[in-house]
Amino acid sequence: MINTLKNKISNGVDVILLVPDNTDAWFTKPPSYPITEELMSLGATIYLYEKGFFHGKVMLIDQDVAVVGTANWDSRSFHLNDEASVIIYKSALLHDIEKELTIDFQNSRILTPALFEELPQWELFLKQTPKWITYYF
Image (tube, rainbow, N blue to C red; front, side, top):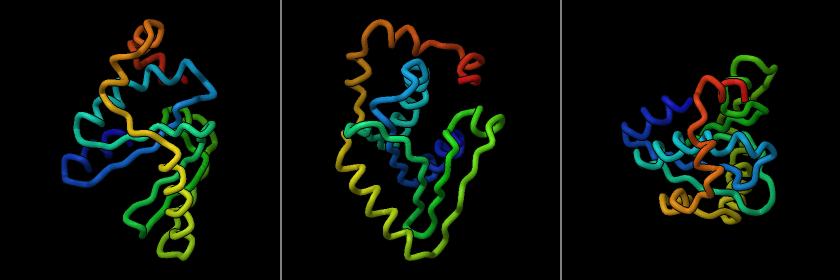
């Protein structure tokens, strides 16, 4: 998925992501920073949801298609867990999904490179977690 996002950004697609600022597994957030920083450097806009815990797995593509499901964007969800998603195409439900996402974005702040400079030492340490370990998160 990350490679697909990077490819789409390089082809001029506007990629906007919403990720939780608060997570239910604190140790999984810092290892994601290198990917987040790379996506930002390529041109993705990333928002941090601040109003509680955001656990949505929703993708909206040009108000024409939505993917809603249970899969996190990690190896466990894609390869090990029994996850499910639904693809919604050309439905009135897409307007409702967009409306709810708009509210979620309003309850968020844009992630900037400056925020990475303010990380505490323990997060900087965990940011370097090897990929072979994070595969099992």
